[in-house]
Length: 217
Image 1 (cartoon, rainbow, N blue to C red):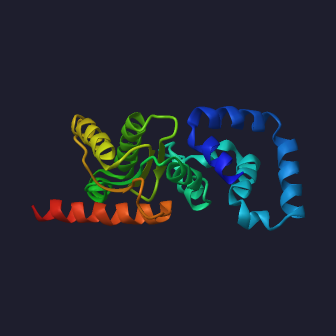
Image 2 (tube, rainbow, N blue to C red; image 1 turned 180 degrees about the horizontal axis):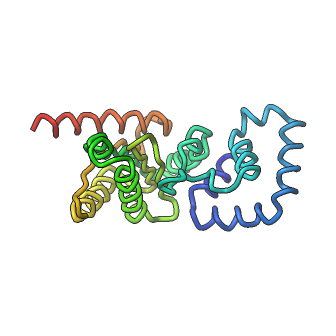
């Protein structure tokens, strides 16, 4: 069930179709899920995305997305929704990459030009990331204040680097120009099994190395 729900939430088109059905029968689904979790409380630990679905149905489907940037909310990652993507990659012997993206000088933008300019910057970066990571299985998540996480199935380090090169060029073409630092962690067939949380941590460390190199140059 966890893997199936992960696929639904990772595929934006399928997600919208399933969510539409859920919302049309919102009350019935809420009642059914509430009863299930009450009768089998262990499912809250075994299938945490069920609680995420229940909460979203109770409060609105926008809770699946970050309200400012409209990319996926980090809570879905914490709930383990996307674990199925990595499990599928490992089962199919296909690569998967995680990329942490951090906006350069974002604090300066906020301090000098105000939070409205900062919000606009976040939206522009999210839009370009979503445009480049546009396959049905690609996932763009707002990971922190000015950080984003990309989950890219069937993508090795070279492919992730090429995608980020396109992102960098697109940001540089904006007026005013924007720039980001990024780090990549890739799982390839034959490597030791690893979790998405660990991959995100590795990518985050790599991003900070790149940021320090840029600051020193």
